[in-house]
Length: 589
Image (cartoon, rainbow, N blue to C red; front, side):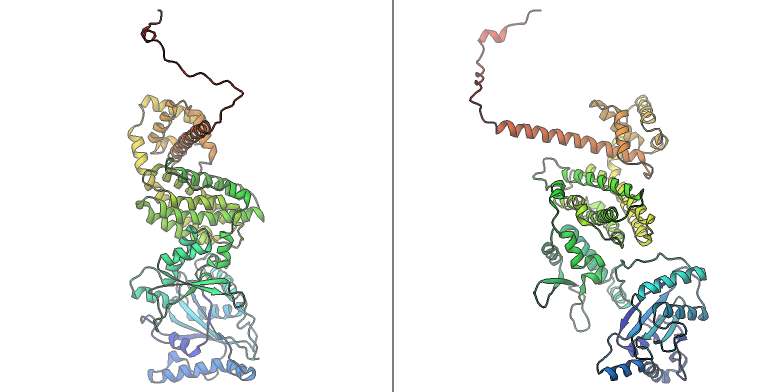
């Protein structure tokens, strides 16, 4: 059961909608199922068409009487005096009777402070049913005694009451909110999107692009520049005294009102964490100790997978933090650090969707979009704790992906593990909406990871070693990871892992030691395909070893180039050419 509280200032306009045919003729049999008190007032849903207009006006005047009396007494208009709360049952729920909906309405106006039980001086309200699955509760928020109601937090209170009603009426139990969800599009916004044949409303479209821009930007100026480059109108809000930017609003170029003016949405109206203050918390410069740990932009493409390997490293570090926090009843600083890594992971998903090979981008964008909801909770993030992960995500935007397929697949494996850990972390803390969003994101992320892995796994499987060699490597698996050996050897990716182990063995790496080390990096219980996971861990470890050797060689070369001669040490004489016959001498046998 979903309530949605909003306010307005036109009683007659809302009544016309509630008792009218609807924007798409979807309203059937509009009528009042409950009300505060209606002595002699006609139900506009129960009159003929020629009486309908007068009945609406009469009802609007009756509901507005306390409002007009307050305006006369104070000499000014009462702002946003129309209180509106549609309440809808979940898809698949049984249809409630009029009497049941009447009881729902009475409980909600009581819980929200609009009209508490037994309060004869409460606000005037009605509940209108014009469809099988929902009602609209409308009230004028001035009490009979002329005071405004004490209904602060009414949306949260309505949600809590609906959770209790669901349990009592045997309805589908929806997940409780925590005031961190973004505002849902209005009916008018949805209707406009449908008329234009668009999947998303302008509000949702702007929200997704704002998240992607925030993930790519290093400061607020770059954030606004990216949005402008995307064709989005940016309107900064300036402080009246200092003239400094205190907020911003966005508008899609083709989203206009009846007068042709662009419709702007503030950052906080798009999502709580898109307000300028929240973005500035992320954009704040890293502290010196964190800055030293943050990855630097690759100076060249000699080491093609450096950005992806750095992202994989930071994802594994974040995974260890989240798993440790999930196993504790941690509070305060640890919780804030985990929430910071969730926010940084959300940014990394958006940047991965831009930097990954083209065929993976649609699924990665879907994963990033779904995780936006899991990115926010009531826990305030300590963003500086996740600077290394955030910077690793931004560095991906500088990396080409032409030859980095294996590195991308390895990053996605680590991202899947971190997302599983974050899902569990949210679930343990009762963050039901965040856990559900993370689970939805996981479906898309796993699909993209499997798609990225398929070509390399197929190539490795095609070069699998002989059956005898596979039996020997299987014995190494049983000895090194006995608790997971059965699942690893039953995994369709086992031939690919056997090839990777054989390749590592040819370079002098013991398969048994390599397996023990790889299994110790992260747990394998949550891996659907543990052999495939080990393939990417092994290939990533091998690539990191090769990269370290290359960097070490480059460092030695640079040092030798910049060495200055030491005058205290005699110079080594130059090699002199040997006599001609010396080259023809044969060593004695």
